[in-house]
Length: 224
Image (tube, rainbow, N blue to C red; front, side, top):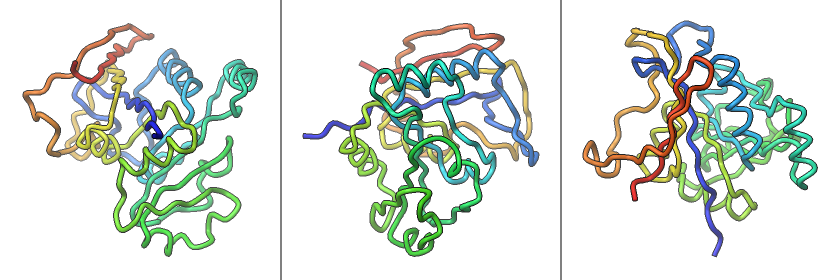
């Protein structure tokens, strides 16, 4: 039996729960020390996942930036960079995004309709896998497990984090709280409305609290 990866959700939020503002430019909530912490978690992971909306909004490269950490991965017999994964139901992806042109291997999970839309646009850039009529996140994890992924780091956005939490597929949550107030109802939040397991009566377990730069980093795990 193939085990699914250990799933780590990673997010930076403002004091009032936002992950960005509503402007066209990305709001950098993390400071230098927290970006370095995130880089360490990336280096410890076999794969990093973001949703297609995050690619559209931020156009990230999604790399392990530290040369020392990349060298340590190589010395341990791992690829220099973790596998980069994105998810799209529609297949609306731009081959010009930086995501495809930096780092190591890339993988796209989509639907049958998404595969038809993508066509050959990503040929030579990424492997494209259909999960059927809809995106099934449990099936996604099962496929990553078959590929040897033992730890998956999920970096958003709102819909992706919501899906993992609502399906009870998150093993850890790393919540970095920035000393910033956004206050814009049009800005995106960490998670959206959903039928979360246990609802408001289920309490996650606070496993660790740390100060990283001017951020408070809280690590939560599943309840016992």
